[in-house]
Image (cartoon, rainbow, N blue to C red):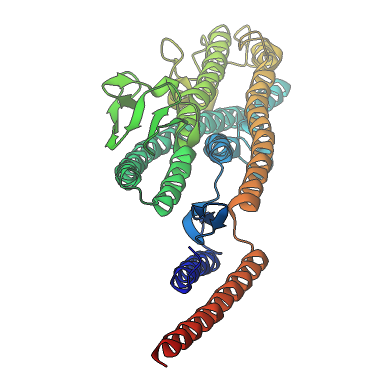
Length: 459
């Protein structure tokens, strides 16, 4: 009903609503630079009017809620892209180190000692009686064996470092899943009590993004504000307020730490996030390169030893092996490769036992052009290995650039939607302050009118 007291009630409600809107706006301004903050907007609702006959009396306004501006779809897409960028980042970090071991321009790799070894045999063929040339062959062979040893050792060390990184990543994942489960519980409780859990949801989104950077995840939202998080293969990480920790166990066959979920080995099924990239380099890329080094070392050792034993040394005796015998099954050949003779006279350069014969030296040098390693010459086989590494790095770099661009676009979209615009909030603040001032003046006017009315009744 249109009375002075009714008008006072309406305008006081307006003051409360405008004051609440000012608080929402100032909170946005205060958090303009807070990472992960989603801006809020004041939601006003008209109060239910009073109807008397043909008359309708408005009852004012209520600040219903401060609505958080957020896109769950964009956040989900960002988490998915974060998984890929995390995987590519750790993959490239590992592969860059592998590639650095075969950087011929910086003096690492096998190309130089490989060429030098066969070149020393070619030089020996020009004067097989020269002891210095014979010494040169042994020295070049030792340099080649050392290069294989060092490359194999460096790869094994890197694999061990990645193994430690896997354990650290699992520990970080478990810490984050525990945080998200706790936030789930708090958000669910506030939602049931009708309270606004926006601040906690923002914390959970930030933790989920960090989790996605570590491991590929799938997220399912519930009606009560809870979320369920699984790995890419469906293994549970978070269900409601319960987190499920991953574990690591030593693989007896490889010596590496495998990842387990609820007693099941899921190592081979992890592909996203930093953990996926670490496992890919540790369990696929490095073993592949090691196998190729072992194959090349075994092929060279076997071919050179067989040809050496077919010739004669400087003393006219049957030739002996130059390199150590590779282990059965090839594995470990690069790490164990060594030169087994130190006396230059034992180099089998002769093909007939005479001191001036160079037939076997020529045959040994010719191994450089023979398809002894999986149907390829030693140089071609090694070049293929280096190309494989470089190609993997190049492809991953291109994919990383594309993923980073998509991630940046998503972050820009989220920022445009949920970020705080200082200009917009300043305009809103001015608007709400003016509305509050106007309501305050109306309160003063009504108060004066009520005082006048009271005084009139006393006359």
